[in-house]
Length: 325
Image 1 (tube, rainbow, N blue to C red):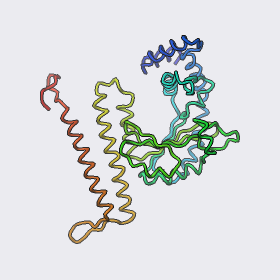
Image 2: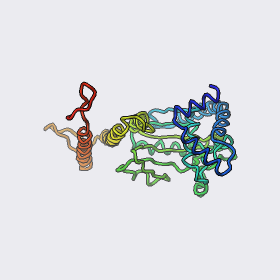
Image 3: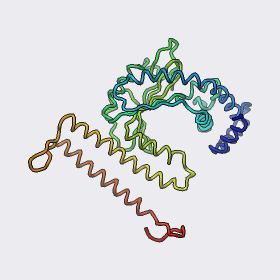
Image 4: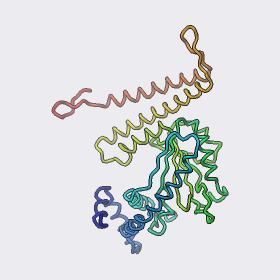
């Protein structure tokens, strides 16, 4: 698509018109001659060529990922042009007044060193308890640099010798109420996510390109996919507030499933429940407590589901709201 048509389509489709206008006015007020449209045009032209280069790097990187032990499923992608230009606009707008942020001065010459997920890799594991294994594999392939350097840089520059390294301290995104004790013995940064997103993010340097690796369980992946499609940045949908609440409920069910599946794995590996002649199971105090806690959590979620149900008003045949559920 020709640039002018593409730009107009992007502003309309992604509803960026107001953001662009506000940045243009701010740039004009301080004498910036290059508009956000011109910045995006130059990135647009450069990325069309650069993206072909990224395809080869991603394919090479996949060979390393395939050697990692404990990965149930892996997916990869190279950022689309629409996603890239959209991120340039939104992130520059968010960080315009923060001159320390690279996004406030992003352009075609530096965007590759500011946007670190042009190549993204997602590693899906069966259970949270398997994270320790995959973490060790990633750090072995992409070791930490001198720890002092991470205090000096938001993102470490690519090593001059081409070495593959971890360029920022990994981040653990967790939801309210999650047990993050298992991560405290590692050099990770905990990030409480208000909407319940759960994932561990690594950013590495590979062949002079930044690559983001996300590690999460199959349960967290299912919730994340649902939330991303129906809630995240979908504020204009008329059902948004209801879907947001449903996503919160699903988030809790997901976390329960994570923990319950982990408990099943422990029971299996230790043969920790044995059936008696009275059709009962002998269990340790720890397992008994887990089951008791599970009931409490399910009852709490049920109560929240009831509250959600009580807000529903059944639509009448004529399309008007009825007075009763």
